[in-house]
Every structure is written in C-alpha cells, then in structure tokens.
Image 1 (tube, helix red, strand yellow):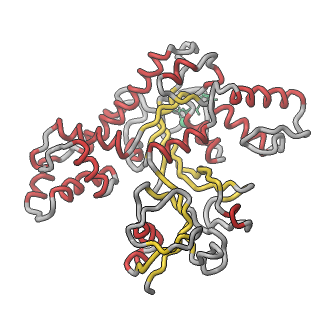
Image 2 (tube, protein in one colour; image 1 turned 180 degrees about the vertical axis):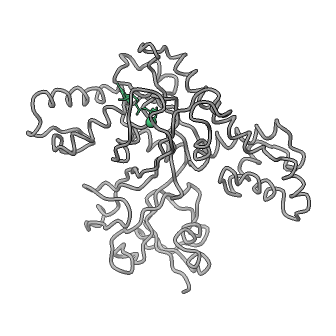
Image 3 (cartoon, helix red, strand yellow; image 1 turned 60 degrees about the vertical axis):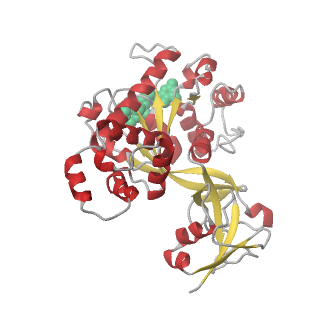
Length: 383
Ligand SMILES: Nc1nc2c(ncn2[C@@H]2O[C@H](COP(=O)(O)OP(=O)(O)OP(=O)(O)O)[C@@H](O)[C@H]2O)c(=O)[nH]1
Ligand SMILES: [Mg+2]
C-alpha cells in the first residue's frame, strides 16, 4: 500500500479507538497508558461522489466499495503506540515503532484534552501537548536521517550523479521521491551540495519534509467531553470524538441507524439507545465537533493535494476489458499528468503511451495533460 495515514499521539489519546472506528477492526482499547505495544495497520476509506451516477450504471470497484453513489476509496491507517517526551531517545515504548511513522504519507497528531487529573486542559496546554509529540517525531526523524553522515558523504563523493539525486540517496530514508526533493530544494533554497551539510541543514531538511511532504494534522479527541470547542477551533485544531465514531459504527452494525453519515435512527433502537444517538447527532449538528471523515478528506485533498482519477479501458462504457464499470479509483497528486496515470496503471502502459481520452468529453489528450479531480480517463498504449 503506497498511501498510509499514521495516528500518533500520547498514551490514552484515543488512537486505538479512532483506528477501530475507521478500520472497523477492534483493537485493544484501554483506560491506561501503553495499551498498544506495536504499530497496527488497517484499511479505512475516503469518500468520493462516484462518477457511475452520471451514466446510471452501478460500478464494480476492484478495491474499496460503493454505497448509494458514494465511492469508498481505500486509505491505509496505522495505529501507533503512545509517544511520550523522550520517546526519540527510547523512553516509554521505545522507538522502534517510530520508524513505521516514516512510512506514513501524513500523520494525525491525536491530542488528549484531558489531564491525568481528569480535568479538561486549557487550549494553551492542548497546543503544548501537540507540540511535544511533533517535537519527538522531529527529533527521531532528524537523528535517524543524520546518522552515519560522514560515511554517507564519503560514499557519494565518488558518485557522478546530479546533486538532487545525491540528496535522494539519503532522503530515501523518508521514502520521498526525487520530485519531493526538488520541491524542498527549490522552496527552501538550501545549498544543494549535501557534502557540506551540517546539523543545521539536516534539521532544516527534516523540517521541510515534515511540513511540505508529510503533513501532521492536529486533531483534538474526546470532543464529547469538552463543553466549548470555539477556542480550539479558532486555533486551527480540529475537534472530534473517537468514542462517538465508534458508537456510530456499532449502532450501524446493530441496525439501530440506517446510515453512518446522517445517523438516521431505525425502529430497532430502544428508547435509551435512541436518546444516546440523538445526543450524538446533535453534537455534530451544532458544529461543536466534526466527523473524522471530513478531517481525513481535508487531509488528503487539501494538505496532501490529492485528486481522484478513474482510469478505464472503454471510454464510452467506462469499463475495463472485462466489462467492470469504473473498476479503479486512484489517488493522484494535483499536477500529475496523463503520462503519470499511464505509469501508475502499469510501466508498460507508461512506456507505450500513445494518447489519452477524456471519458466525459471524448477529447483526445496528450502526455502532458494535467489531470483534474474525478477525471475518467482512457489511456491508449502500444501493446
Ligand atoms: N470520552 C471519550 N473517551 C475516549 C474517546 N476516545 C477514546 N476514549 C477513551 O480513552 C481511553 C484510551 O483510549 P485508547 O484508544 O486505548 O487510547 P490510545 O491512544 O490507543 O492509548 P495507548 O495505546 O495506550 O497509547 C479509553 O478509555 C477510551 O475509551 C473519546 O472520543 N471520548
Ligand atoms: Mg492504543
């Protein structure tokens, strides 16, 4: 899986609760620190209005699902053990699992707004909690990125490759691409002779990776316990309730609600269940807290600048060779071209690219055509 969102945060923040609700897999949840002892992966979904509604034929997704015209595009989630101050030096659950965070395309920094004394923290403390976690991740990344620097410099000094490719030799630690390296170098104006980098440059590069390529989203959990979330939201913090999300999932599974979006209650819910669900629904309607799905949607579409593209083999019927309607939904980067899509489908299709065709307008598109969100595209290639 190439696209993963990691859920990081201090112990007890509710990471596993959130993970369970998103991936519909039950993992250990506990009111004590370090319930989770290793990174766990699972599948969640990002929603998109499925283009199949435009042609009136139900799609057949190869991966993910489509319900009531909403396409659920797979996004991998990673639940990570709690991070504490000093984790980058091996405190708490240590740091071996922090390595798994570098495989994440983005990180949700889940913040617990409740103190050890079970009081609601003031906004300043909540922000400080968020900074501490980010600092630990930063320290871990920069120390690992900067490790064995002299040997690395010696190794590349004999290599006859462009400066940015030299940087990539080391930066591949972050799993980033040459395109990412180029972007960082042009936006930071750092010296491109990596042989001359010292501690300062190592930290600057790490920081650029964490802000530009691997964004960290601050999300305050347990919003169900916070009376007024205005101040938090004014400080650019998103407020959710993993507990409510999990209740909604359970209610849906038990047939107490018709759908997970609108929380429309069925006759199967008893009075107590109905009241609990109404309370949950009202919290969202008041805008006091928001659904995790909209946080993830913003993370993917706005912070990571992703778009969804639907490749097809038949531009008229929007099917693959076997007649499956809109079988794939790819997350691509804004700015990616028709050629990038061809390579994403298969290296041979990329190498044999002849032209692309827009499934809506039937217009012929060249290699450099810049993909739009929700494009339906056929690639014609030499076979
Ligand atoms: N009120 C409330 N409690 C929550 C919420 N989310 C989680 N909790 C509770 O917080 C406690 C910790 O939840 P976990 O999901 O185990 O937390 P974690 O971040 O995975 O903890 P570690 O694995 O120890 O790092 C549990 O008692 C949960 O029931 C929430 O949104 N609201
Ligand atoms: Mg946990």
